[in-house]
Length: 141
Image (cartoon, rainbow, N blue to C red; front, side):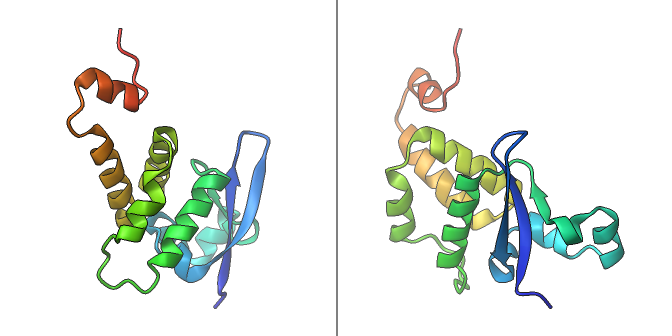
């Protein structure tokens, strides 16, 4: 069995990047894990075996952050967030946190989602609806 798999990220319609992702890290994503569990004929028929797994909603930055987070939680049997996780994300912009939440949802990695939700919750807590809309970049008419 291979130790690495190819995944493809898309910065835009013209620019794509191929990464070799360690299998143990890739399996943290339920989305990728489900694709890996397809039988070999289905993989070949869909062109995934030779080209890699397309991650259509993931850009390079989001994939790198997923890999960073998954590496730090590779041996975490309890699936708990740490103070280091919070420190890593608390200085990121709201836009980055929202982008990473979308990536976490697409990749279907619950622990990654939870830490990002916690960070956003702390930013929204106690704010008025108008302030929350501003943080979430929601336009109010």
